[in-house]
Image (cartoon, rainbow, N blue to C red; front, side, top):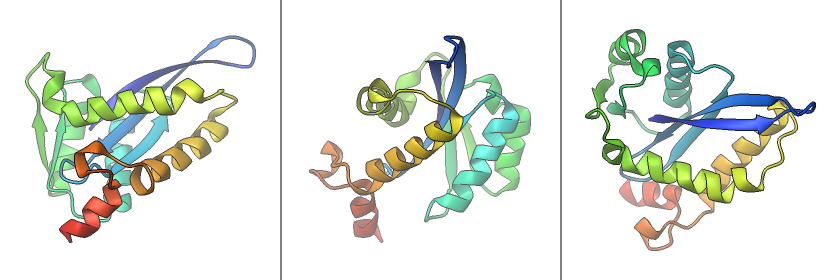
Length: 155
């Protein structure tokens, strides 16, 4: 799990900051995405509850960096849900490489082509991108299969 920082230009040319929270399954690359206005533990906690509801399998462990959004309140919320929370070694983003690589795909295949209008439009387009990524986008790691095809093979 990680956060991608987003910067858009608003209607009056002002800077609009948003934060894409991303969870990716190590085994299948199935992802869940959600954008928040704030980069806080409350957002991270809400996102954990979102992925528990959304993902079609039980989450056993969440691995994060040491960002402020993943500290004590978040940690104990995750543990209280029966999920192990593990921090990666500081200054080692490669230890969370799958989510980092997926953020690069987001930038190159989604955000680079996106014209920001407002948050409602962004959320709708992000939902569409998430569905495409999980159900239609071929992945080199699975010889061209999608994450949900990889998941079906593992079930």
